Each structure stands twice: as structure tokens, then as C-alpha cells.
Amino acid sequence: MKYVLITVRDDEVSSFEAAEKLLVYDVEEGRPVKSLGRPVTPDLLEDVVEEYDAWVLFTRGITRENREPVEEAGIKIVETRAGSVVDVVKEFFTW
View (cartoon, one colour):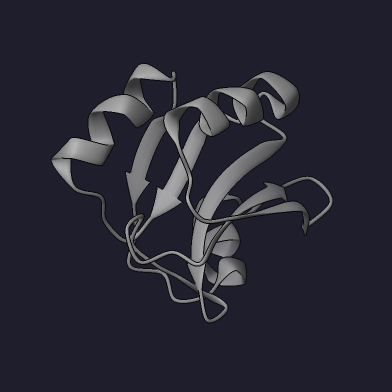
């Protein structure tokens, strides 16, 4: 897995609904490669999955009504309490 998706607000991992942006993060290089502003729609997520093969979304939380279309787009949702994007990467991708 090279790319993951992370919901972000004020440079911290946020809930899906509160996110200012959705980061496409390159785990191997340790840097974001794309930032998508709001609103994030299921169609947009499908495009991101297709382009980057990113199938994991890290978020602090997501409502049921948003969870279903995200999962239907083929994306696994991982709820985390990590603060920053770097914390998420350290927590889940330490080599």
C-alpha cells in the first residue's frame, strides 16, 4: 500500500464531516501528494481510488450516512485518535 487518505482540519486528523480537506498521503515517501478541498463526495472518492489505488481512509470519525457510500467506493475506514498526520503514519506505518 503506497497511498492512504486522511481527513484533516487545522493540520490535525479530523472527523470526515469536520474535515477541511482530504489528503492523499504517500506512505513510502512520507509526504502528501494531493490535497482535496470540501466537499468530498463518493464520486470524488472513487476517482481518487482509481487514480492512486488508495483504499484506506484514516479519520477521527464518520457518520453512518457517510460511512456507507465511502465503503461502497471500496475504501476501508480506520478510525484513529492520532493527532497529526505524522502521528497516523508513525502509528500505522512504522517500518
